[in-house]
Structure formats: structure tokens, C-alpha cells
Image 1 (cartoon, one colour):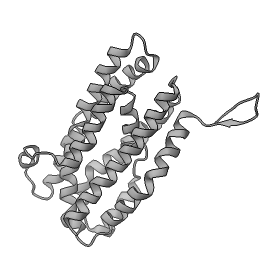
Image 2 (image 1 turned 180 degrees about the vertical axis):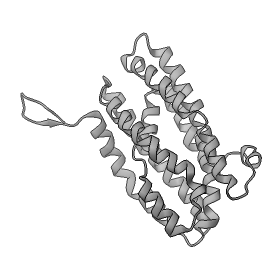
Image 3 (image 1 turned 30 degrees about the horizontal axis):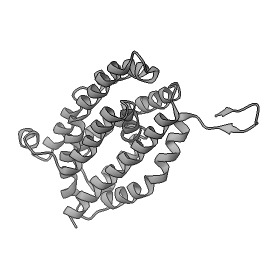
Amino acid sequence: MEENRESGSTQLSHSQVLRSKIAMVMPRLHEQLYQFWNHPRIGDMFPKHLEILYHTVHASVPLLEAALSEAQRLEPTCPVARALIPYLEKHIAEEKDHDMWVLEDLAVFGIDRKSVIEQIPPSVVATQIGSQYYYIKYAHPLAVIAYLAVVEGSPPMADQLDRLVTNTAIPKEAMRSFYKHADIDRYHSQELWAFIDTLPLTHKQTNLLGLNSMLTTEHAANTLEYLLEDFS
């Protein structure tokens, strides 16, 4: 935290402000996660969850590329857009082929990858990803950082995944993508929160981060609710 020497007050960093806004809407997502992982039909539901996850992850690199393109357009006049460019270029390279990991998890259940790839993505995915394109285009490409703060900002730990495998009897081989992300997203999240604190954000840009992070959290809860309703 930074201290205002003239007033003696303590000022929160950009990342702390963003975390606090995400925390405001997390209770609903936590409730949906609890119901999902403790559902009596979790074994049937989990492959469907992976299918939705595939479509979400498959959209991630194109989404980052759209944000990069918009940042490059704004770069001559916007210092935040300028700062986004190297971060997004690096992250795009890191996110390549992660959707293939999810297809490999689905193969454990005997689900053919072609049948998943050829699906029309569910409306919950279209809503979540579509809102990101809108904010990137009509607000600022910074919006994608709020999205990443939710989907990568608090990665699961390997021991948490071990408990889920034990408690749900889901094959560990069907959660390999989760274990991989538990490892790499520890570094991605540290890098992300540190990066946010380096940005020369305006008041409007700070508000955009908060608004989109809260929206993304709500979309994540909606996705789980969509699954739970299907198996109620």
C-alpha cells in the first residue's frame, strides 16, 4: 500500500482496489462452485463442464489478439494501451493450444474431439466472451485485464485438486488441464497483479477494470448455474 504523506492516509494500489471489487461478487460464485463440486451427479456433469470450458478457452487467444490489435491502434496517444502491448504479446504466446488440453481431458471420457469442436458454443459462453469484445472495442482494451484477473487471478492449488479427485471420483487424468493451470497460473497471477500496479490508470480506466471484473465473475457463476439447472 502507498501512503499519502500530506494527509497520512493509506491509499490502496490498483490491484488491491480490483481485488476488493471482485470480492464483493464472489459469494454467489462460491455458492455455485460448492453446489457443483458437491452435486450427486458430478460424474455426469463434469464432462459437460469440460465441453463448456473448451469453448471458453478456445476463444481466449483470439480475444487477447483483439485486445492487442486495439491497444496497437490506441498506442500513439494512450500510455495504458502502450503498456498493454508487450504484456499481451507475451501472454498470447503462453496461452497457445490450451484448448487442446481440455480436449485431451474429454478423451478420458471417450468423447470425440470433433464432436466437441463442431458444437455451437452455449449461450453462456457467447455472453461471456461477447461482452469482452464489446468492452475492448467500445471502452478500452484494458478490459481484458479484468477478465484475466478473474479467470487467472486466483488459480487452484494442486492439493485442492487432489481433494476434488478423491471426493468426486473424477479420474485424475480427466483433470490434467486443471493441474497444468494450477502450476502455470501461479506465475501468471503474480505477474498479472504486479502488472496492474504499474499501469498509469485514469479514474475511468479503474472503473472499467472493476466493472468488467465483477461482470466476468457473474458470468462465471451463470455458467455453473446453467449446468446445475441442466442436472437438477
